[in-house]
Image 1 (tube, helix red, strand yellow):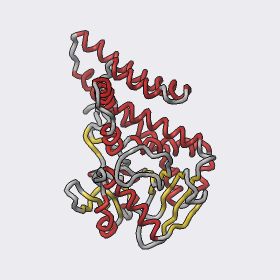
Image 2 (image 1 turned 60 degrees about the vertical axis):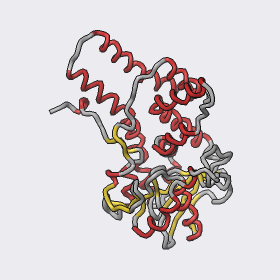
Image 3 (image 1 turned 180 degrees about the vertical axis):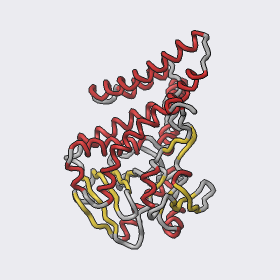
Image 4 (image 1 turned 90 degrees about the vertical axis):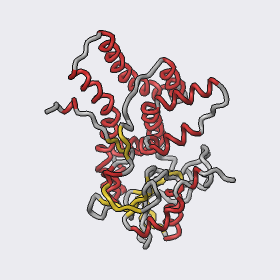
Length: 326
C-alpha cells in the first residue's frame, strides 16, 4: 500500500466537479454535449478533465525568461509573488536534477517525484476550490452578503481568476493566437505552450487580484433566474458577455462583463458596463437565452445543464466565437 504522498493524481479537472454537480438535481449526473455533438447524461467525473492536465514539466532557461517577461508586466508586488511561486517549482526541479545526476535509482524516490509533478498544481487549485466552497454555497442560496467578509471576497476572486485561466479552452485559444511570423515569435509561442502549466496559474493570480482591487469600481451582481429556461454552464464557465466581445473571432476585448453561472437558477457577474445594478437582479427569459448563447459560443466541447431540452436548445452555438468570420 503506497503512502498518500506517493500516489499520483492522474485525472485533472479543469472545471471543478463539485461546481458542475449543481446541475445534477441532487445527483452527480448532468446533461452535457459530447465530443461527437451528442447529448449524454452521466457523472460530472466523466467530463471537463484530461489525464495529467496540470502535470509539471522541466523548465529551461528560455522557459523561465518567457515566464518572467510576462510577469514583469504585472505590478511589482505581484511580480514578486509570481517569482516566489516559480522559485518553489524551480527548487523542486533542481532537487530532481541533483538526484538524476547522482546515478542512483530508487523506486520510492521515482514515485515521489512523479507524484509531486502530478499533484502540486492540482493541489493548489483544490485549495482554492476548498476556500471558495462556502462562498459558492451561500451565493447559490442568494446570500450575497457572504462577500461582505473581506477574506471571503479575496478567496472568491482568487478562485474566479483561476477559473478563467485554468481551462483547456483558454489554454488552446491563447496559444493559438500567438504570433508565429519569425523565429523569435515561434520560440516564445513554443515556450508558452511548454510552460503553460505555470503561466496559467500565474495569469489566474493576476486576474483574481485585479478583480479584487477593482471591486469597488466594477458592479458585482447576483442574477436570479425564475424563468422557464435554466442557466447552463460549460467547459469554460467564466465568459465575457460584454457587448464589445466579438461573436465570431477570438481577440482581446477592451471591456469585460465576467459572467459565471453558479446553478441553473443563480449566476454571478462582474461588470464594467452598467447593464446590471450592484446586488440582486431578476433576469427575464430573453436575458437568460442571451447569456446561455454566449456561454455556448465560448465553450470548446461541453455545455452542461440540468435538462436535455436546454442542452438541445443551445448546442448549435458551441464554439461559435472561435470560428473565424468568412
